[in-house]
Length: 155
Image (cartoon, rainbow, N blue to C red; front, side, top):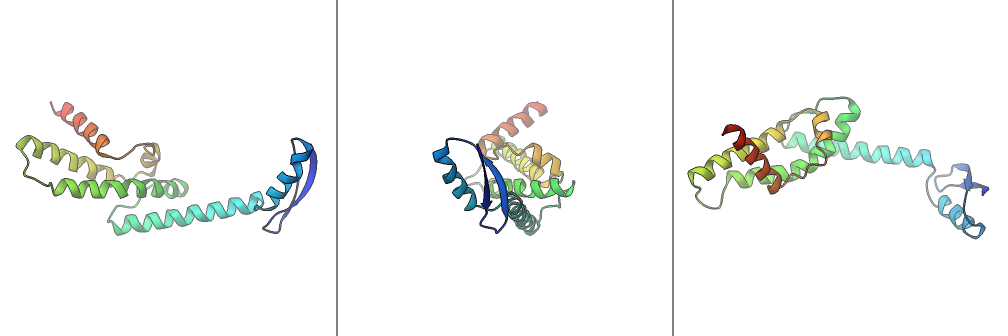
């Protein structure tokens, strides 16, 4: 272990403890020098996240979706999560509204249920709910599962 003074690409200097075999330390020091310091990296990452959140909020507003509620941090995070879901849910809803063929009575009922499920998902305004469901994959499999659950409740 040895201390190195690293002159980062951003212009800041840091004294850093570098561990490992002696022959590899200078390489690691050079690599660290080619990167921003921790503070500059964190600021850049925060700016990128804020920009992505603002773009997602603008897309949501353009799509006519309601504003999210929650803390500023929750809303910023949830906007990006919702934007990814909306990119799938809106085309899915549009496809459901315009089926390629005539549907049977049973299929019309399932279609109606599916559309209401998609619209309910799009209408969610709680940033907390979007964050909690961030692992959900909004696809046809998800929708079929939700329709089945809804039909079981009605039966």
